[in-house]
Image 1 (cartoon, rainbow, N blue to C red):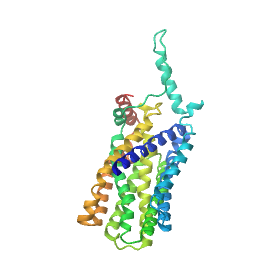
Image 2 (image 1 turned 90 degrees about the vertical axis):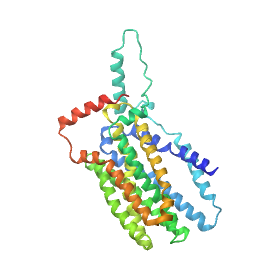
Image 3 (image 1 turned 45 degrees about the vertical axis):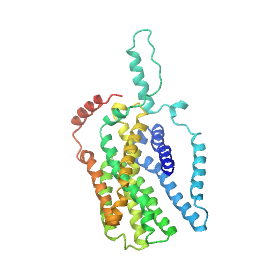
Length: 353
């Protein structure tokens, strides 16, 4: 029963990320917003960690005053219902209220070109953008690599998020353990903003920034593997806050700004439904990889101790970064303009929407 409930919970909750990212992409598609895409999406993705921190504080409060455990579930449930009512009042696409964005303009131009090819008497109705298929989404350059790499990064995040309170509970009382673990989620909020802003500064070279963050995370995980059992509360707070920045930045940006970049590929421009599919594909692949990887944590801790878990996360972080290596190299050493245009034309013809 519990497994079924958790499955339904995860199934329903997973719809929020892709849909939310697609709606943000609909509204922030003008040239100025694209230039500041990292900052915009970095700020927007803070919402999920506000929820994480609030939930941790709520749980700590429930435990501290001695309320029944189900209060820790009731409060978030009521909050979700209230936010759901608010969300129903929002407008998903500016085109629905007559606002013509860049994406809508491109779609209208494509429609006009198709109508010009029609025989006399034939009519082509504007039914809106058609959803891109999973297969065509995977044909967009770097989508498959990002989807797989994100799985390893998401696994690292999930292990730290779900297992930290349990690990800290061996050294601190439950309330203190929850509060210290919450610092990790607090660090994830500025992480997304920092990665977004820095990648905007460097002309959207997000893979290079993500690779740098992951390299730094490897160092912190190595230190954590050696000294996590003996660290006092203050060093733990500093370590976890910093690790939250290093993990949260790439995780936030890959599922928002990077997904928007990928969905802006010339082959699917004018189809604003591609962003939701790309985001869902990256998120879904990440969740599958993370859920499988989480099964290894229990056996690792019982057989080799917590140090093995941190080394396992180092391997996952390294694997994800290596998958992004072609994109990092491409951004660090861009090809001459004429070569890039030729390659882009070939990629555009290979993706059928």
